[in-house]
Image (cartoon, rainbow, N blue to C red; front, side):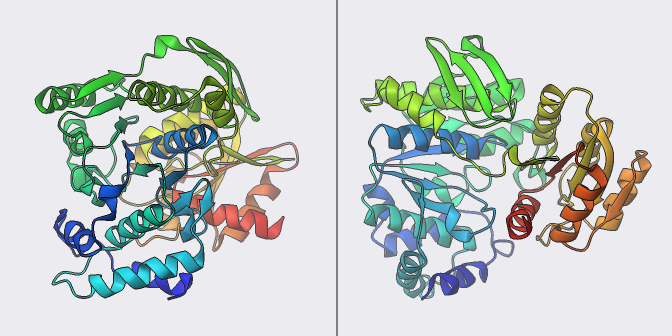
Length: 423
């Protein structure tokens, strides 16, 4: 297979028609000689901040001299972004090779694996072939029944910020969602948690007690944000001082602090992570589409906020960095999100909105989204493409204005591609 053929094969096996469970991925990996059993993992679950925390961990561990695998989802522009070693995306040739091996086994199974199960198996094979010292592994959906949870006890489990998302699948309450995420906590394991959500925190604490796992919750009293700008964040996390991270969102210092808490636990387990590697790794983090500055004349920001919890963090960042500024929003959302709450958070900051349909079958119709915006007193106009929306938003904002594109990671990738295609 070529890389393109491999990606097309993966996408041809959707997950919606399959019952949740680990049976398929276990069988597939068993047929592939269980590559995951030869790897060490940091397993990361949560509602928001997973990708940023994963990026921080991978960057610091690379700076410490380890060969680091990174498996995240979804991708923004290219499928290959999902599987990286030391920051390098899997090549088309390598993806085709591992998927050729996987396909012969998957098609011999009574129930064919889903797209995410195929991706998970491909990542494990690639990381083993590249002899990774450690893999930073992000869950796709939930935790307990997520394909990534096929691994044995990881070096560390990390639980990021919690909020309501995927309620139709994971359950209608925060306790239900937390219980699903807590599935990555293994007996006798080591766990770092963001904390700050009482309902979820109690679930995590109880799960750790029941499974004999050691839990460390982020201590925000150690965190001091020194400076926040479009260039990034300068902060201290006692006893560390003078740390910087080139990510601009007001929430990124907390993500970095959780990553630092996790790194401290890895040090206790014998991993060699010098202070210099911590500073160097954080200063080198790159995570596109998360409060990313694409332009400055006018200001053009791109953020992956795609649920109410993420939208609240994005809105707070906009208010901190640009007090009193009214924004032109380029917006597209998925219909199964808490759209009303998301729009209520954005409306006080908005001058107008241009609306797109993200490239997902779950996308909300732009006309319906415009109607919801109009009901909140906002001028809104649907656009047929990311390119059209981009040009319309920039023209409406003018050189002294400001544009922010957000609402869906699918939209984020489309707008980012359109920006670099037209600029």
